[in-house]
Length: 108
Image 1 (tube, one colour):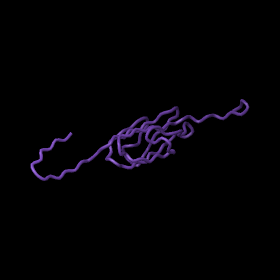
Image 2 (cartoon, one colour):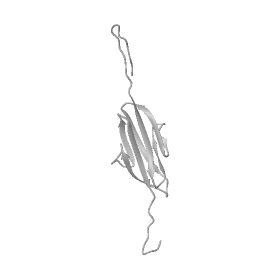
Image 3 (cartoon, rainbow, N blue to C red):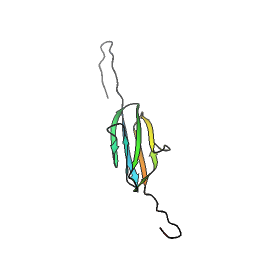
Image 4 (cartoon, rainbow, N blue to C red):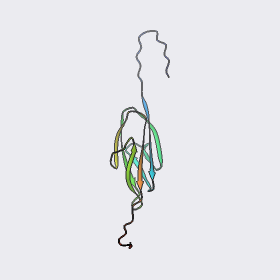
């Protein structure tokens, strides 16, 4: 909240800041990276950004241990890379799964 007493003509600027939270989940290990230094996280990371900032999130699944499955919340429906604009408080989660072993007639 900002209170200003006006005794004449004044000029002011307002800067809007939004909160952005990224987390990972599921049964496989992985993390999320971005070109923004604040987003390079394992289980969870969050930060505040100037309003309308464009963010690209990149999922990184640990090789041979996990695969990226899907996004939830703000990135829902996008592929392994999610691009969005932080124009309000946003939350998203990258879900990773463990790869399934293949069996054929009961043999590995």
